[in-house]
Image 1 (tube, rainbow, N blue to C red):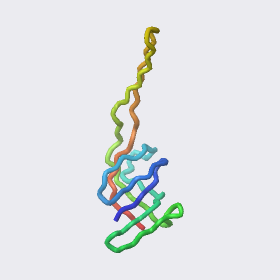
Image 2 (image 1 turned 180 degrees about the horizontal axis):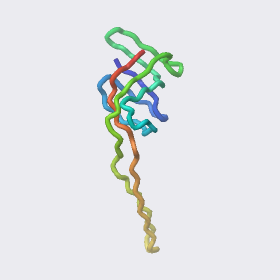
Image 3 (image 1 turned 30 degrees about the vertical axis):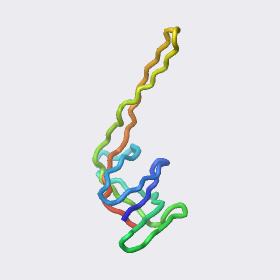
Image 4 (image 1 turned 180 degrees about the vertical axis):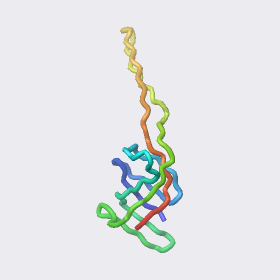
Length: 106
């Protein structure tokens, strides 16, 4: 069974047991799970069932355990103009939430 969920403008294909990166969000300090209610598509190949949302599948949700809050590798941005002694350096690391999918309800 797999599902396609929408999180912060991105569509992510998930199945049970997958570890995925999603956008960081404000969670209580003791929160161990996250529920995704914006489910666009659910498929169960063994049973031969498919549910397509218009735009969302009603009463469908995906539950995930929070594993960690992490950052992506550093991206360096360099501006440079030759012969003008102009150089600017800047770096960026995006925060994300690492979650493990535990349950897909359709």
